[in-house]
Image (cartoon, rainbow, N blue to C red; front, side, top):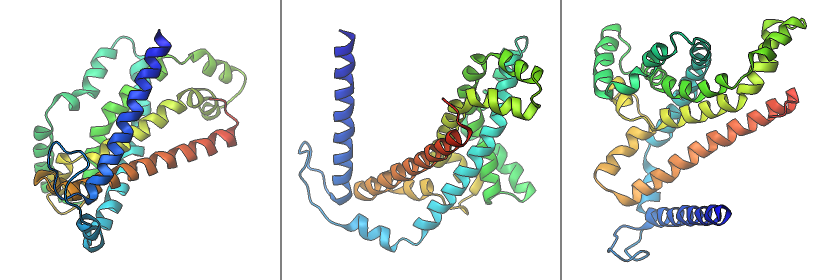
Length: 263
């Protein structure tokens, strides 16, 4: 019974993904949508022509990739130590979690406007480092949330045994903790990049319109309901995130093979 339900669910999911991909691709060339006709309408190549003439597109993609990559790796690095501290501190675990997850509770408007005033006074508003910094704050709660179960399921005796057998702190950490946490770290990196790449409001407020990112470039077309250009922007968005994920998967395989880890 369960196998039948699982197979049915997978088939439905595959159908929805294929249907979405087809309609999104058709949406690039479709100018009008006479509901409820699924595949009808008027078609043109206006969206493709727009990509050829928009000079800000490449710059926005580069900015988004740079901001997303830097903020993701820094946030994941910091989240590693925060998550480990929370998982090992039984006494103040709930308090530490409340502090870390506070940015998820406070509205983005309050955070954005408050940080904007501070960064304007510091002369950082409208610059990429300011956006990277706020993206790091935005990503950390999610990264910590992903890594905490990994640390809680790790047996500290493995690390202690490595130290007893003469391994240095670095080698013991790399060959015990990092091996166990590798999948969690990889998931954190992928999730962090998607969050950063798709972030609109904080990027707009801290960038004060001077830093052009892919999301900022795409959002106006969604507001005015320009379906064809929105569709092509959505496809580019998906492809860029898939490209990053494939890159991370390739790097992770190289690391695993070089270390001969079995994860």
